[in-house]
Image 1 (cartoon, rainbow, N blue to C red):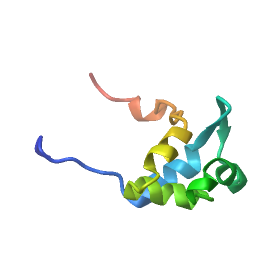
Image 2: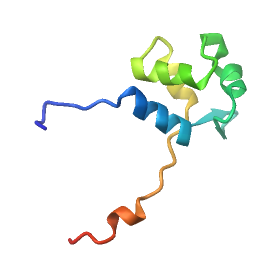
Image 3: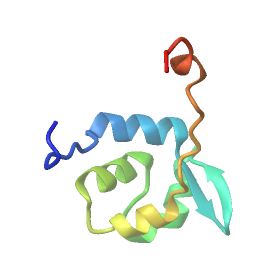
Image 4: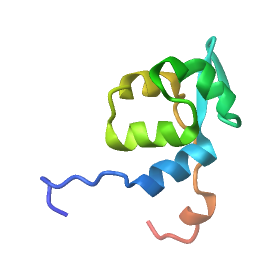
Length: 89
């Protein structure tokens, strides 16, 4: 890959990441996105009522992208313990 090329996440990877690791911010509290009710209460005024709407908004950089990304918390990822074992330095 040359320096000028950039890779963008596809719809499936955005969807998988949000379904597995997605959480939102309500009253400065991190809340897992386990129910569409949470999404509808917070983003319903923008026409975003479910997790699929969030996936679409992020993937397509829709008109309410800023509101969606402000609602989402940073992803809490774990380090890959097994992937690093056995590699020579």
